[in-house]
Length: 532
Image (cartoon, rainbow, N blue to C red; front, side, top):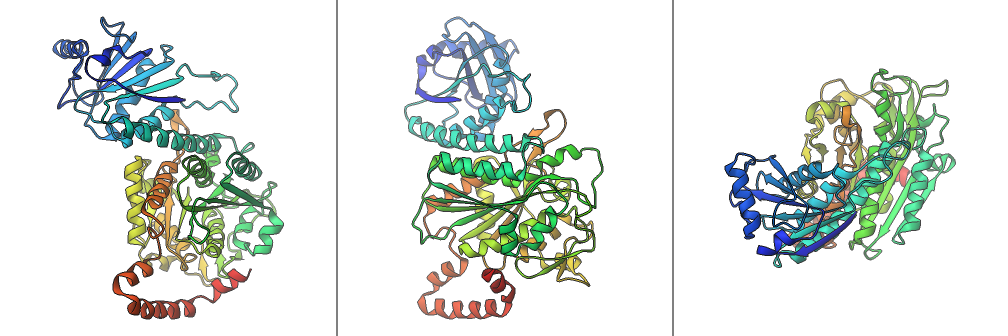
């Protein structure tokens, strides 16, 4: 999509040159300063053809005095980016089948545009015009819409231009995530995800990609990860992505994405109904790749690492069985009570591997539990973290990007159900609080750094008539990375360092020694993993 911005105010609005003009209005000030457009609005409201209520739209064909052949009046709930985006998407639906190749979007005086408005528009347009074609030759080869121009005042022009650039980059990342999710499982294999990572590294010089095969994974001691892949003919892959936008000395943010390219449940096999949607179980991996795609375009001054453990979970004579005990890279043993709780088994080894980067923070992203879908539906991703600052930063990024998360509890008491008579811990607890116990399981492998977990089982794809990947949470993750880069190298430094700086050097040394002593007493398993 070709995104442009232009300045037009007052009488110039009705003379904007486009195939269709979408005019977004708010109830508090439904005027534009253009006499032609204002009369059309007034007449439409008087005739009850249009009302200034959220979701209302009116299509007018070849209106007198308007240069665009198609005009759509749109009512937004308010002047917020979310409402603006919803109105634009509604307007696109009005002209989608009419052959408009160039759509201009203008707004009334009550709606001053910011960078967030422009970014929201770009994401809304990309979502509304996305068509999956990879394995569907009957799909149209190209949509009619080619160009979108945002019309703003001179005062808003710079912000709109910046927002469009950012929105377009994020939209490209979201589109990559959607496309990978939508590919059938016989196309999107672990090998395909590895090849996609390599393709990104060829396209963008700031991205480096390394793809490890089974032998290399075995050498790392990732017994938990490999136990999930045992029943599949598809070889597993461990993908390591690096983006360096800051000094090598700056601690990176690490994103860890679950990459189960198809999940039958293994020996604990799932019901057949709806199992086709288990091709979306690599949504976490897709979001990491999509975020790297967006970050490579935007080039923020930050270091970023992506880790993707990817394999299939299939039943066969060589599959891991319920009751089997596996040894993770951390040295902790795990009793596999349910082979359909496989995501945490591949993530735990990747989370242990993340230690070697001495990260500023680690965020894992996974279509992890049906329990999270029951709790939150498909509106919010589930956010779990014991770190107040990190959780707050992710929640804020979600609000800014309109890719929201909701914070869930992570109390230690939930871990009681993970106790095992035959291993350090079991891979599942009871039915109650399943999303929380899954997060608590992962927390056992994250003691060395600041960590957050995003359960995207409800947000990574849609079912029903709109079945398909959403590309979430690429928007949230990219905004989080941009925010941290803007805040500078200390934005997500360890909490200890921030506390110490405030208290003074003497207190810093005392606190550091105390924490180091506690860590040393608790970390024999982590030391063994680091040596591996």
